[in-house]
Length: 241
Image (cartoon, rainbow, N blue to C red; front, top):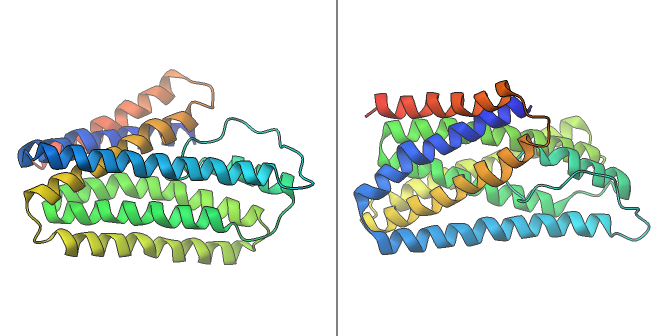
């Protein structure tokens, strides 16, 4: 799993470096870019704080003993490796109630991911393909996380799979909404949205995927997977022009 997380982090960072930043430079609307980046930072940090609060409330529930778990993920979005921590919390607390907080957080995250894919469609086919490839890997981890958490909360595997599939519709909503909203937008809003997406993707790679990947013992091969993911996606962006 750590190897795939390293690879995914390289893919995401390559998408930012090869697609989003060059487009942001071409738009040259720096006031919009600063505003969009700041909003993106606020959003991802707020989601991270919400995720930590959910875990803390679960651990501090009456009659629950603090579980022996590793360092929790910084954010409440994007990284599927939150599943072991959350699942252990659920088992320690002994709850079988539906984790509404997690579901709401995941829904927001998928909405943002879909918006980034919709943004890519307004920029061009190459950008759409690159962003979709990068975010597909991230959503895979997220789906595994939700599946494990819902199962640990007492939900049957089939019902958990159905809930995860339903949450996946949020990405479609975000993609369609973003594509429609930005299809006739001017350079300013496009630049702001690009900067927002850059902030969200950088947080995903640096504070989610790599943090969780480093919980396992590092090897040369694991580290090489990061550069492999970066090289493949960045190479595709250059070939696509």
